[in-house]
Length: 282
Image (cartoon, rainbow, N blue to C red; front, side, top):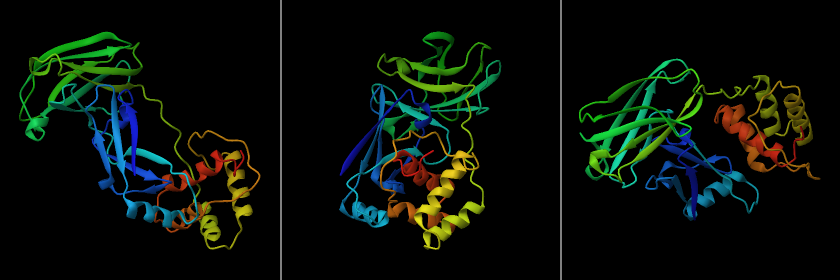
């Protein structure tokens, strides 16, 4: 099975060097994921699952389903971001300090220009670099890249600039097809931190071992979310459905989470699924 996930290159957080993927909430091997950066507008994540991969996921899910939910996320550190030039000759890696860029501050950008035809070897080539805010150029420079270390520029962020700014590289090595853009966020709004009280793990363990039933567990989670004792990421909510049938894979996840075999984020994916499908009503 071949599934393509198309990521706009304006979505900078997913322009990291490596991604990881899940299918129905279960992590899949990084060997099944290939990233295609050879488009000017999009990055394509190719998930290629063979029969054994699918059978393995089916056994983990534990109940029949004809639906596969795919998700991708950064697999490690958020930086550097990476992209290819339009002519696929050069790869650019970009990082910066401090990582939280704020208005009215100075940020240092570090970038590398690598030759894709030379197995991503750093090269010395001419370049033009602009920084755009809503398509308005607010900074520009040009130079020749360093083949033996990071290239560095300092940028004073204006006090009226916030949101997405774009670093636009042009005319690498004199080629008008060697262009690339990388979006960066100024004044990032932090997502509310996921919060799960430790004692909920006890309930999850009891539920996974049938010491409490589905109804008791669901009512408890529903109460905790409503009272904001347990905070889950923003979730699109469906209408309630008649039957409160919990998929086996969510119960398995709860047991693994209770024994620290999976992290909070993986457990919350199951809770989000219950909310999205109207099994937990908030």
